[in-house]
Length: 198
Ligand SMILES: [Zn+2]
Image (cartoon, rainbow, N blue to C red; front, side, top):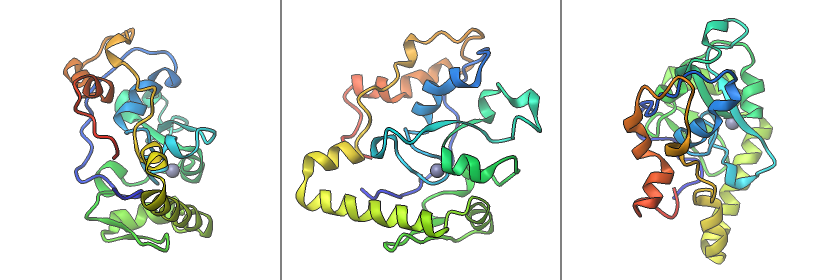
């Protein structure tokens, strides 16, 4: 269990909610699909509820207004990464920021092994002094909790209590991939399949 371990495999979008009139309405779907953490820097909801993690447009909606409500263009990101990205076009993080391409050192530095990963790291300033400090702090907090505070460790590295129940949501345009709901965190918790930490 490592606080900054990027996913092993590229993201394959599971559900496909359609028809909401506002990007914010997709939020519960995105929280679930992006595992309650920022797709770029892995900042987690559980570490700081006051820091907003929110809907992010991969193709900026100002430049691609027809992608404003397209689910595949919506991601889940922290406000720091969202504003660092701005209206720029960048490489796809769900394909480029993977565990074998990106390593976070114990001193908080992030190292990209591929050109795509390095471009994202640079574009989002993931090696700024502030970003390195944030990661180092959390690496040390998690290490301390692992050694001395098992309950705190479960809270910081576990899933939120309020997992969205996607089976109860009714997107106005339906869900093009209804089978994806069974793979949601809420459904997995109900089946006893959700690990205590991730
Ligand atoms: Zn972030």
